[in-house]
Amino acid sequence: MLKDDSLLLIPNVLKVFLENGQIKSFTFDSRTTVRDVISSLQDRLSLRYIEHFALVLESGGLDQNQRLHLLQESQPLSHVVHRTYFQGMKCLFRICFFPKDPADLLRRDPAAFEYLYIQVRVLGVWSTS
Image (cartoon, rainbow, N blue to C red):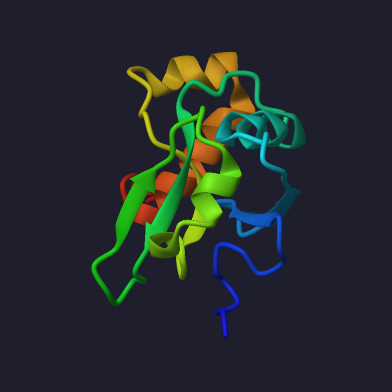
């Protein structure tokens, strides 16, 4: 039986976990790529610049050795979800490439900056006090 946060609960439907706690689902076929999902998330989240974003697979939980596996944009989703060693992982939409100047990101794309802020605040990188 698959856990509730598994990569694939329904055939050909990928759940992507967002930093704000939301979960977005994507149906896919053999031609759907990681880049297609990122582009769809860009539209859904009203992001203008996505060069800092990526889909990652998370293995392990907070109490285990957590590992993140960066997915290549050209990789077909069917290849990702049907690999046996990806079972039990969850897919996350993350800012994986930190901007050189976060203030510039804030000026260019406030929604992307907010997503970055939520992510790093959860990780404890920026102090809110």
